[in-house]
Amino acid sequence: ARKRALGIALLSLSWLEMNRQELNSYHYSAVIDACAKTSAWTNALQLFSAMLQGKVQLDTTTFNAAISACEKGGEREKALQLLRVMLQASLEFDAIPFNAAISACERNSE
Image (tube, rainbow, N blue to C red; front, side):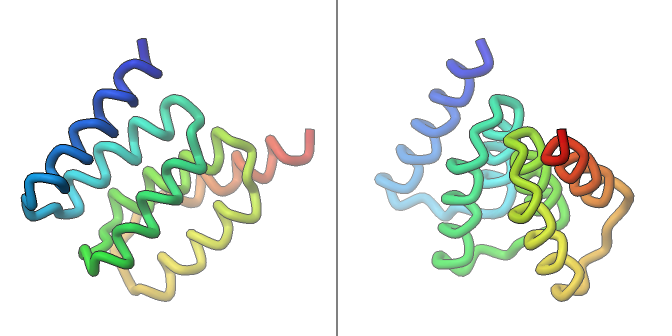
């Protein structure tokens, strides 16, 4: 069911882009979160990169979802890299990205 939801989320985002709708961090964050729930970390990072290229404002929710996707995919280095970028961006944050990055390190050591 989650993979189906991810497919629908990706199609919805594509539809919005094709119809020249203005995409914002809420759109991307929702789809990146769907990627995280299905361990589709590569999709999550592609979307994150698309946000940067499209000059969409990154926010804490987006970083949290992307770091979580890397954590679920066991991508420790990618999770830590995103955490570094988040800290450099001087965004407000809570414990979520740190916990996800720690979990990614734990998963990678197993």
